[in-house]
Image (cartoon, rainbow, N blue to C red; front, side, top):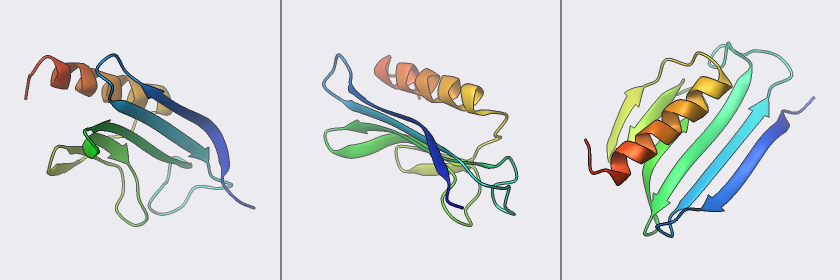
Amino acid sequence: MRAELIKHIKVIDELDNAIEVKMWQLPEPTKDKPHGYKYSLVYIVDGERIIGYDNAERKGDHRHIKNMIEPYNFINLDKTVADFYKDIERYKRGEP
């Protein structure tokens, strides 16, 4: 059984930057995805990923802020989306 796409949103914001959110429900939890979800959330500015949240194979939950990668403490999908949008707003305000 394959992962089921449960959310896919792709929009262009007021600054002409791309926001894309993709989330999948796995058929069962895995060692690197014990919560049972796969996800990829990206904010693209001038063709470059500025902010990203994902759990790529064998890398666990993490986020990208510009060129920095750090672990991300996954709680649930709603919190992940909220944290992602908060990071976008911080970026737009010029905050680190």
